[in-house]
Amino acid sequence: MNSKLRILFGTAVAASFIGLSASLAQAEMAISVYGGVQTAPHSDVEVSDEPDFTAGWEGRSFEMPPYYGVRGTWWMEELGQPNLGVSLDFTHAKVYADDDTLAETGWDHFEFSDGINLLTLNALYRMPIEGTKFVPYIGAGAGINVPHVEVTRGTGETFEYQLGGATVQAQVGVAYEFTDRWSGFVEYKGNYSWVDVDIDSGATLKTDIMTNAVNAGISFHF
Image 1 (cartoon, rainbow, N blue to C red):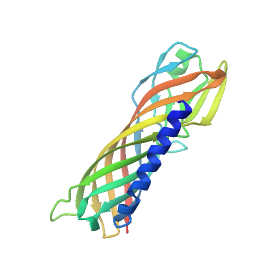
Image 2: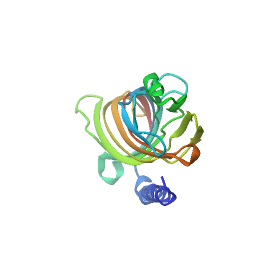
Image 3: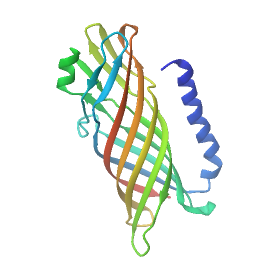
Image 4: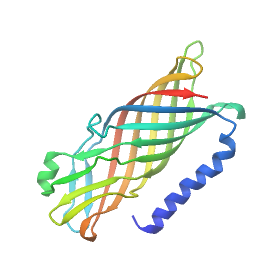
């Protein structure tokens, strides 16, 4: 990704956070942590100095470093919109090229295992079920992906964090309120990320990665 687009993404995300700060100051807040099982389907990979290929991805959610996420959510309780919320969501998603991909390319190493690292700003809507402690919710948003690019091939090695590009997110889940302060949740969360990064020898690598995750987590409300 070129420098102008990097600046544009960074500026857009920062402006969104600043613009929301006054409203969020009056909201019900929650901090959530979660983990789960994350997978990714095959994706086409374009390399500027080699033939294109299709990568098969493995999630390996429980291998170190594990798949996990942290989320801050602001529910607009005091603004007259108790079921409308905004979240800032960081997810350490990851993918590893499978053995067939490495054999096809002749590469020794190809993965984003220190994370695709997704940061998104999302709108959420919750739908409490009257007479129960169950609270279904849905959400969608957009942000950036910051992959740790790990490529080892005959021409050299790349091992660094880069700004990959944009990502979009959708989620649906249900929370259970144990107390006024604590709740647990399960959800499906999907992200589609446009990854455009630099690798060795002045080459570029582009691929679109779709991650699918089933998460379980816990939230503290204040």
